[in-house]
Image 1 (cartoon, rainbow, N blue to C red):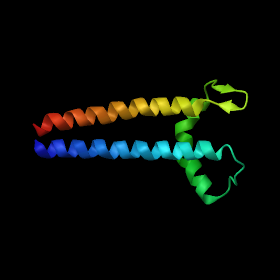
Image 2 (image 1 turned 45 degrees about the vertical axis):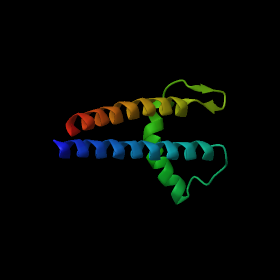
Image 3 (image 1 turned 135 degrees about the horizontal axis):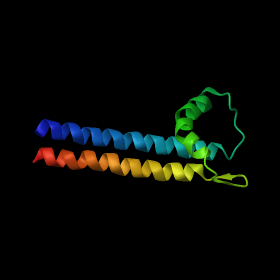
Amino acid sequence: MFVIGQLLASLAYLFNMIFNVIYFLLVIRIILSWFSINPYSEITQILFRITEPILAPFRKLPLQAGFIDFSPILAFMVLWFARSFIVGILSHYAMVFMR
């Protein structure tokens, strides 16, 4: 049972790190949206390919006020909830199996 607990703890840590990377990439994308950048650069294309599937569902909602798009804020909130749920459950069951 200890091995299963360690596996679940490692998965919780992995998911936590994945969510951290996604947060970081979303913040970079938000900051880049304030400046005029080359949308055809390779780094920008990679960043957009990673973050667009996360932001696209929220962009369909009416979350714009003038030139300000509030969809990233809602995306952060949903990601925070998903992170808390997934990492919390994995951490809980890791502790249960390590007893």
